[in-house]
Image (cartoon, rainbow, N blue to C red; front, side, top):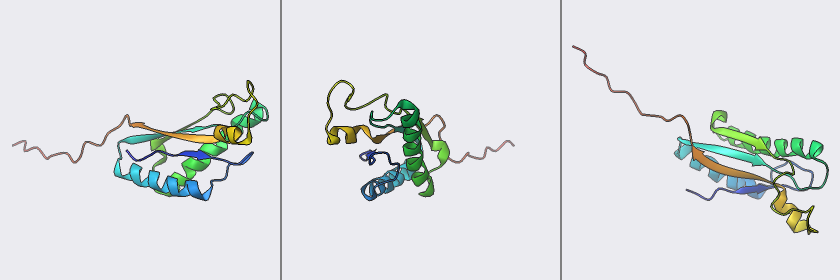
Length: 130
């Protein structure tokens, strides 16, 4: 499988960076070539701000990735998004003092691929019933 990117965001933003658009283009090509794969999109934030604010921000981050891939021809039913807000940090900045780079690693949308529950079995052969 091609490398599945992690998409990083600026503080308090849900706009895609141009470098990540290129990575998502490659992800869309891979998904088109492998129609039996599902894409799981997981939105995250850093731990600044409260969870009531961060959860919707993580949702917007996941949704912008999903919308970008939908515009590239990936069916919405092949993508499932989940929003974690600040609950699954890479760096727990409540326990340690984080640098800006450490906060950046928390502001992300992670992508995973998995097998779809539905599969395409190809064209059915006609059966001669006579």
